[in-house]
Image 1 (cartoon, rainbow, N blue to C red):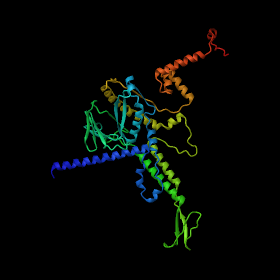
Image 2 (image 1 turned 45 degrees about the vertical axis):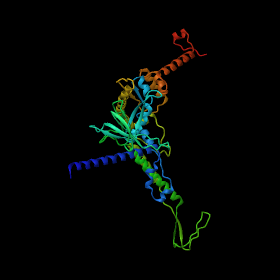
Image 3 (image 1 turned 135 degrees about the horizontal axis):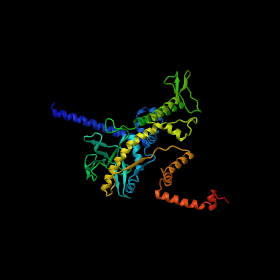
Image 4 (image 1 turned 90 degrees about the horizontal axis):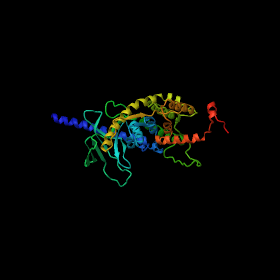
Length: 441
């Protein structure tokens, strides 16, 4: 066999395998998104109930994937404070809102790309568009893409839209759009000279660029839906039962009607109603075990409060109970600090291309998870922070009302001081010298 012919076969084999892997990953991404949204998950379990008997009950499609993913995504629950300048604050007013979703999708899928888009209207700002599925292409570094391809979002809500699927290709020099037949529809130079994408990963990359997603949560959700469907079917058969007649020839005629009618059977025949022994308790115990194990693997906890055992706990008790999750939060903060730096480097380039110069320095502070406190504890903490100049009264007001600017908070404080001072009873100079409070009238 010629050497070049063998080489072509090997290349084609590798290409076909990579294409198969890419298609498999795309199906996996859509499945994860379906389970997170709780939409159209019947398609993933209906093939397991092919017999006609399983068509008698609707498949169970409960969704706990979203709740689990949302609970383990805590980096941006309280937001992040970025210290750059006023121009940057104006450009990124959407960032805290958008990046919460980006963190959740990273936890769900494993690896996503986020495109940073500069919009002029209604005011100049950055938009952050998550790309759930994409194909990455690499140079010498297998962990840093040099170009990516992903499908453009189609207008599926428009019934008259029959356009072919479109894809977009990006690298540091250009980007172009082509249809599913490979026909290039438009081509433009990349105005930034860098890929305007940030790639976030659920975990550290092990043997490849893509990190694994929340397979354990998806698998547990699917297994629970199968189990609940089987339990519903078992209860249906248990409630109605199945008639069984022994000692009857096949050609003998049987008359049957409702519960107010009499069934006539030949002499010597024995009629019974057979019911399966549906052990609901064992099924529920298995269901709870799957939920509990999945939660523990993700440093979560679930409760099945039947007798009031799960009572409210103090903030300290919750923090101790939540210690593993808090340690996870500390680990994840370091990774997202690096991602925030990646975001800023690209934001700086894009802003510069649009006439806005951002400084090289970038300050960032993640807000720690908050646990409930009693009113006296909260008062003591606030007084300590004020006494040691760790915070101002205006900062306290902004903690209570995040919509207030620092100037607005100061204005409200000054107005309140004037009103409160005016309402205080006046004190005579002699009372002041003697250290006596004024008498109330």
